[in-house]
Length: 81
Image (cartoon, rainbow, N blue to C red):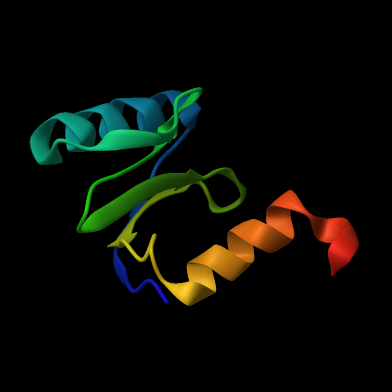
């Protein structure tokens, strides 16, 4: 399970985009979804925008963990669960 490293409050989506772009450049992050620049990661960290709480979250990357695989499976195929 991912551990939150930092939560950064932002005023709006534009500020989240600017912050995410800066983090992307600094840490050589790549989009987890090519159509979503607000969800980026590398081998060590994962950065995403949480619009509900107006924050950008920096967390450890657990992309290859079993828990993350199950979350993605449930999201992709909710009918089965």
